[in-house]
Structures are given as structure tokens and as C-alpha cells.
Length: 200
Image (cartoon, rainbow, N blue to C red; front, side):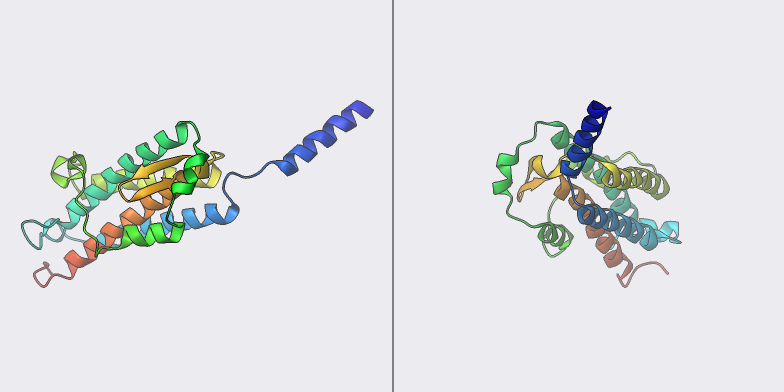
């Protein structure tokens, strides 16, 4: 009986010592940002006509449909990149190379004053979704999975560090990047709708 009691006490002590890989506050912040930015995309597209979805403000600018296709395909590509970093060996020694806070990263990605050319496979003309509805369906499915992941993962996201063009980030920040990226292009959709020639 004494042995059983000692074992139970040891298990209890270890459970108190176990550290959540990301804090409750971090989980909440990421999930909230993912939900809000998903809603932002859906709200801006809701009720638009085919003419409105396909309207291009200029030959070299994207239509709303093209923005949505890019958002949906990027959601897949960015998560694949993040998942690869999480599955790789943890590299906490690289944390010192991270120069942005979570908030700074979100602001940087959402800032449309900084123009960035996307990679070829994420250009709308190279994305296989047949229309806005199909792209939105893919986006929602992948975003819902990501929100569930953030709420439940036990992965040590902070100690899996990867390189982006502007510097090193950890895997938790990559999830914030995904959310902020969709908001960046929601702003682009709003810009298209504000064009004086946008169909009524």
C-alpha cells in the first residue's frame, strides 16, 4: 500500500512539473487571430456577384477571386512549411537569431505598404481551384484544422525555429504568420472593392 501511495505521489509531482509547451495566453491569442482573420475573408467575399469576384482594377492587379485562391493555396503551403519545421529536430540554439516579437511579426506581415512578390506556385494563374467557392471551402477546412491544432498541440513550437526571407521565426510565430497573411490579402480585397470601377 505504501508503494502505491509513493508511486501516486511521484506521478502527481511530475504532473505539476510538466510545462505546457505554449502558454494558455499564447494558445488563446493564436486561436483568436486565426478565427478573426478567417471571418475577415468570408465577410468580405459574402454576397458578391460573379462580376464583382472577377473584376480586376488593372491588368497587373488581382481580382477578389484571385486573392481568395491565393489565400487558400498559401494556407496549405505555409502549414506544410510549418509542419516540416515542427517535425524536424528542435533547435532552441537558434532562438537567439529571432529578431521579431509575435506582435511585430503580425504587423509586418499585415503591412500592405511593403510589397512582396509571391512565389510562382502561389500565383493565382497557377492555382487549380476552379472558382471562389472551391477556394473558400479549402481555406475553411484547413483553417478549422489549424485552430483545432493550436488548441490541443503538445508540440514544443517555440523551440522549432525556421528561416523566412526577413529572418528567423519559431513555429508558433509561423502559425501567427498564416493568420496575418490571410488578413494581408483581406485588405487587398477591400482595396479592390474600393476601386471606382468596381461593379455595383
